[in-house]
Length: 334
Image 1 (cartoon, rainbow, N blue to C red):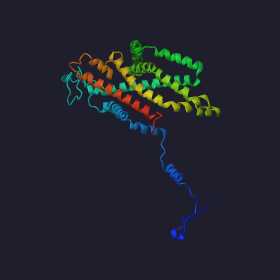
Image 2: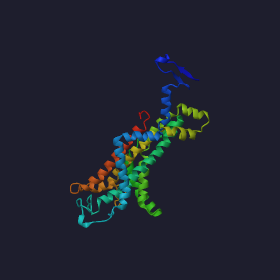
Image 3: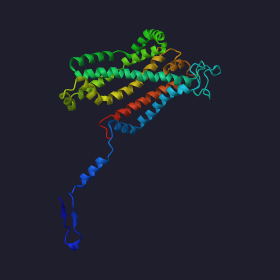
Image 4: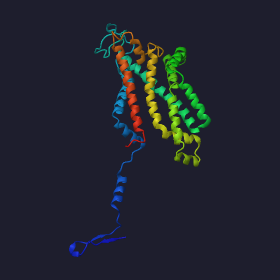
């Protein structure tokens, strides 16, 4: 279809002719915008939002530095955790000992780097255990409801009522040596047995908030239209749970797991501070604080440096969790 546009008489100006269909300018601009706009994925948008959170980015940098320092720095640092310098017992900061030495002349920086691997590993693995248990209980309770929901929630309430620190102390006191001996005989590493015991107990005592959070998310998501559509075309219950509902409730789960790492590090430090954590010859940040508690006035560096590491690590993890909460919030405008 062609269109002729007459502006006026020939003397008034030229006559404009069009040889094709006329498209509105708005439609053309919209089409061009859609063709040229770069599409972002869900995780791309989340990362873009996360980068806007300055404290979260600072926390990510600090936590990454902590992980690299403890796992790589401890391997390349020239001092060993059991090297004793008798001339520098409880010594001040020096070139050979940047953070000083303890009462036995052992390098504090070497022990902080080596012990950080245990503290971080306990925090991360304990958070994973709590995440798996809590997600499983919450998913089953929220998806099936009814009797299963009531029974699992009463079971969760039972665990919530248990005092964590006293129970952890009792279990560690009763079974720490047994785990140490069994793993030392079976695998040649008694420390691994203490690690398994502490991780298992901390994880078992911290899955309840995640279970309640996942249950609430499942209860609201299972009534959505896309779940009804999947159910109407014959999707099985495991498919509905793990393929359709669980990916849509990952945001609060990830945030809860992130914050659980910091809580687990604090719990392990408290347990080691009370003398019921790892053996005394295995340094952790908590056990170093315990060893320095009676010498703070004459050698404050023995407590300041491991305490600062705990503080910075937990603070950075909390900021990361705060940033993830904002980045994964669908109500945020990107």
